[in-house]
Image (cartoon, rainbow, N blue to C red):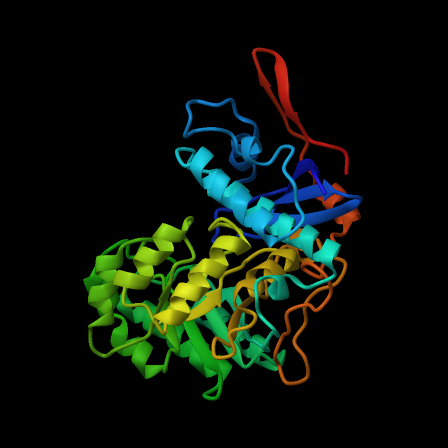
Length: 391
Ligand SMILES: [Mg+2]
């Protein structure tokens, strides 16, 4: 079948707040071919991502992504790998390209899975998928009392793993941070895996992170995530050698295979966290999962948007039995929470399963998409080069 259309839908909550919550807007991609359609979601700034699909060519390494898609065939997995390679070549000087390619690549896998009647993970070469333990991923409360209440609530909801991140953590002093950490542990109880996400707050200041290690050790934190900005591999490595020791997690900001590879090689990570909606799609995320496995670094999905994106984020490591932890956002805005007709829910043992239906196994709720849709037009010299297509 030939790709007939690649359509983008920019959705947004009425108000977007300055908080570390990626579920406040969304860029959906719909690709049609052979009477079927596939859906993907970019974890990216929607407008700049649309622009990178339609912008005029600047030079031979700075072509819009449509150059690598229009008129292409989609019959087997090799076609997706070929499109991914073409896009990297044609658009490597267009910095937003991988963000946009991510949603496109995810939609292509969804579409091919529907055509071939297989879940995406099987097309990636896995024979079966293994259950993942979801951690309730949420922001720290504004006060330790709020953090305590959030931890208690996640525990009462049946989660066996909880992560707190961003919010006030790391922004004041060590004593305030320690109070949040202790509140999180008290609310969660001793038998819960508790992860802490510093949200890049210390830039590359190793000493600031080291000052919190004793408090993290005291609450038996399962990992410390993103103490530093993406690619600060030297700072990560130094912290990984510090005492008391703590497992480091990072990599969600990587928007290319090469960036993830750098983090795998030099950052001293125990866990690499990859967002399929940012790194170039399921294709690139699977490549990272393969390399991570060969280096005995655990792959963990990163996702903080809809369950379409959650399904996409699970596929690259669905078949790796030992990598059995997954991010599971629990504070989604209504846009992201309602964007799919069904959601992926924990079973009675608290585990989630990668959908077994063809493709990503998720259906977009078109009424919700319309409800939050932002109409966009892009013109150059009065000529329209993009407008929001009809749903
Ligand atoms: Mg994070």
